[in-house]
Amino acid sequence: MHVSNHANDPRRPDKEHRYKPPVSNPNSATAEDLTPDYMNILGMVFSMCGLMMRLKWCAWVALYCSCISFANSRVNDETKQIVSSFMLSISAVVMSYLQNPQPMTPPWASY
Image (cartoon, rainbow, N blue to C red; front, top):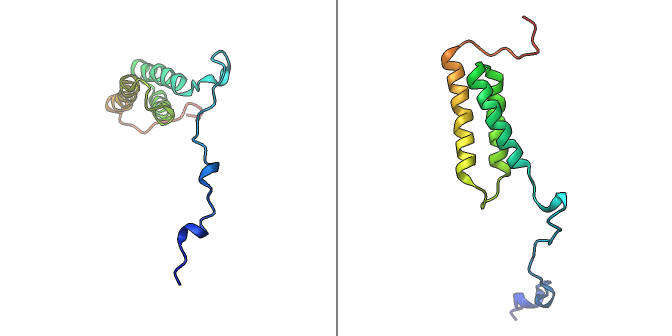
């Protein structure tokens, strides 16, 4: 005798509820995660410092911030801004090593 899979299925269709994201107060701090925006701005600032002052560590921090911004961004975020920040940080790293190909010494290292 064949036992149907439906008889052994522990799920209850009448108890299923579709997920709805919680509605929060727009004035509260938890309404939106601003980490991608902050990291995007930091990435731009460090990219400019890396390009203008020829600081390799600034360029690497800019690339790190851009990666965090990209990883935490949502699908509906402005992709042009994130991609431009990412490309600016990559160009800061490349330009800093084209100008001075010596290995980077961290700012806290003693000379």
